[in-house]
Image (cartoon, rainbow, N blue to C red; front, top):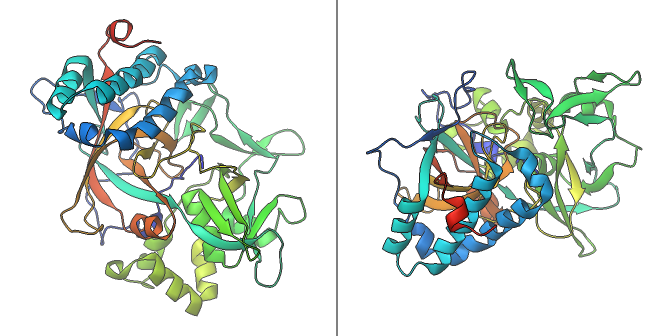
Amino acid sequence: MKLLAATLAFVFAAVMGSCVTPDYGRPLPPGAPALLKLKPGEKPPDFAEGFHNRAEILPALDRSIEWFKRPSSAQFFPQEGITFERARDTLLRFRELLVESRSAEEFKRGLAFDFDVYKSAGWNAKGGGLLYTAYCTPILEGSRKKDDTYRYPLYALPPDLVKAKRGDLITLDGAQVTANGGEVLGRRTASGGVETYPSRREIEASAMFEGKGLELVYLRDPLDAFIAHVNGSAFIETPTGESLKFGYSGKNGREYSSLGKALIAGKELKSKDMSLQKIRDWGRNNPSKLADYMARNESYVFFVELDGNPRGSLNVEVEGGRTLATDKVLFPRGGVVFVDTKLKNFSSPDLWFRRFMLDQDTGGAIRTAGRADIYLGIGPEAEQRAGRVMNEGQLYYIFLKEGEGALRAAP
């Protein structure tokens, strides 16, 4: 689930009523920093949650620490002025504080003493906030063999898809940037060149992957396959009782667009009624229209079969409620973040979502400092919750104060 998540926010709710004033998808101006250090007197959020829920944080934190132990992780630094050593030592010291602090106040004092706090530059490059969406791992019905019931495949990564290597100069949003590695450049042609990869509509209309041995599993519903693409992972229950697990392997490099937003714009559904179940109900009565609306999302995702739970772009397992997906062209990988938002569409209109998370995944539909995706877990409940999340908030990063790493964190 190098998700993308794609990203992927579980985007059927990627609409907030009618018109939103801030442009959360706006790219940062050239040369603008993605992280802004809090100014003297600028109050950080209340970090007490970390102490109270440390047992819940530790599994995700330890996966980030394991990633930093891999020699390959060093290639992604420096990022935003953060060195590899500083990013790694931040995790180690943060873990010490979680384990050794005897009270929430002691934990908060340790954070204030040892760490600098930054916030995302946000949609306006000035810390104006960002838009949170969410994604999950749905459980769907499918079969390894195609038949009259199961006809809609998930495909493995095609061999002609070309990805950038770290250090390559690539163009994103009209600007030339240095690749972090893994960005899709296009399709390798017979002559050895690279061309833009076909869109979802072109892929499906031409059946270009049929008979090439790329089919991993067949689903019973085209919307189920689309849902798997949006979330970047899926667990599949088969008629024989087998449980199959698939995660993100790559995408065609085309722009993502929201099915929910398109249906509202087309006056097929109302924003106040938008939900996955509403889309399913509408789609059953309008199958040809549904196919057309899904094809408007040019992004197409490829999968790989998993032994364990879904993995993010760090190739570590993602943790429900503790893994965050961001734009890895902008933000340092694997770090400790603090999400501060209000998820009005959970169980209460006043429920705050304020917690430490780990930046362990990449939002395939997110190429901005004004967006982030919260991973909410596996199964129907996570799917229902993820499909309703679209809320403004702030995103904070913490990093060990410069010069503190050698004193406070063992390598």
